Image (tube, rainbow, N blue to C red; front, side, top):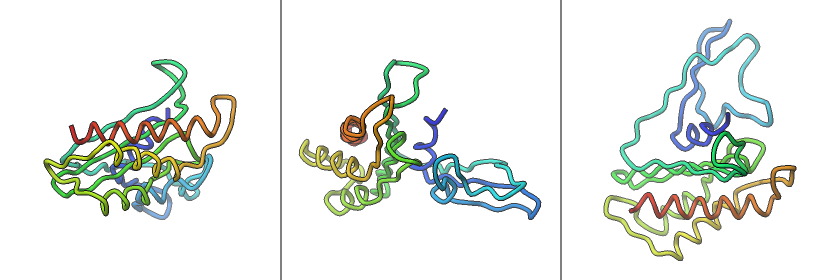
Amino acid sequence: AGDSLPVLSALNAVIHLIGPQGTRDIPWEEFMLGVKKNALNSGEFVHSITVPVVQGWQGYAKVGTRNAMVIATASACLVRDADEGLISIALGSVGPTIIRCSQAEKWLLKTTSLRVGAQINADLAVEFGRRVSDEATPIDDHRSTAAYRRHCVAILAQRLLVRSLA
């Protein structure tokens, strides 16, 4: 049920709301406020969601106990706009809400070019994964440990970055 949420975050979606006071638009990052909490006011509902078109690679991966119909232990969505040289990554199931890894994004953009034809080495991909993992705030619960979730998002981020440049 929550697999699309990191995707909406990584793609910078905008939520369009309608309510008694009229309409308003909220960036995805401002919509999810906490566990089972969002920015809806009384009487408002989600009318639609706008997902910007990104010319570039987009990927999603998750880890779970089965291959299908499973609540994710950890998930990640990475979007790479090679024309603009931009990257975004968002994580699911490793915090109270979806986590946008802005510090890891900024670090990667300062460290290397992500424009068309860019290449990275394995050490850079591993470091990116580590930095993404550092931004996660997982918990121990009946599905997994916090340490395993951190490990998962590090590997997912690393793999998604490498795939985005293939």
